[in-house]
Length: 503
Image (cartoon, rainbow, N blue to C red; front, top):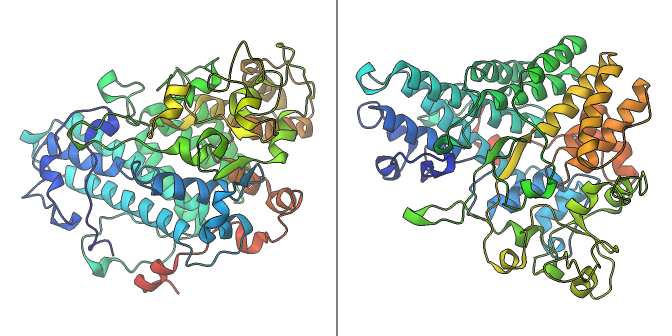
């Protein structure tokens, strides 16, 4: 399976660098990249690393980017509904209705792409270590290897968040006889991920403009904190993992919340002070670069020239309005207006014309149909374009604050958690929270995470971490959900058929 793969490594534009990948582009199979033919110097190492980055969230100029990532991660959530066109695709409907089998094409592609990323990362880790000293400095060698450790951990973590058990791949696969490997326990997998992320904390805290988007120390610590927080609810050492989560998240420094919330998602504020790890996209197609998307068509509703694939659910709208018009603006929580277009005086102000040069009623013909604003273009010109290239925010500082608040609260340090929550609320023009008990803070954290992260796809992982998947999905009449079957996806049939170590 791996050996038969033919791939094209993305140019280093993905990472903001300019090293040539000409040699890499001519290779038809990963196992042909031997130390004699390719791994000769820093340029080769950087090109190999580009391949490892290339599978972040699947290939961005293919249908897989939107049509695998969001259905697999978001359709299970109680805060989204399927749009009208999504109902035409049985493999998507199965994800939302929890009627899938291990042959579902969408999560099978998700599994495959993350393992491609792992194999490319392993290739870098192993081969960069063997590049002669005259071809690369020790500083550059360590930097590139640590980036590959981060990426290997990232891909494994994406898999472990969606499958109960995964195959930990710690060596580069160059022949078919290496494919057979048993599933690891969750504890073994978490240990491996945490080990790689710990190595990656040696990365630099900041990047130059030419290397923007490459992994940093802050990214390593943020994902390390998330790994410990998730594992805390699974094993017998909850307090130890919670303390480790706090320690890691305390090391995420130098970031701040962005006041203009929507700017992080509409392409106008890339790599902001809040962004910790972002997938770098661009409309530039020079030299065959392909890092653009039609995400605005996939997320957009038909009234806004989209394909109508995903909608905010009533559950999400209710949560946004839960605290009433208590913002300092005199309106609902400002995140509602930054995340969703909906029938409201704010969007029907003809003087402001806040919905692509018109009012909400103009576009929606008087109907009341909430539609996502997040990850939509900022203006009419962008809406009219066939392609769209905002950065995809994979980790940001608001998440660090709320994860740290959760860990502190679970450790009984509730008073230390509250200011972190209030910092996130203040950005949204909301007053300080009023509750002070551990249970009240738990509820507040859930509220904040629901309305802070729509379309960033954390909700299902949050629910499962808290043991609330069944209750949440029952509450929105999705009663086919069975936590024993659906808290995790089944191992894809392709893996079962090609890996003889899996029953």
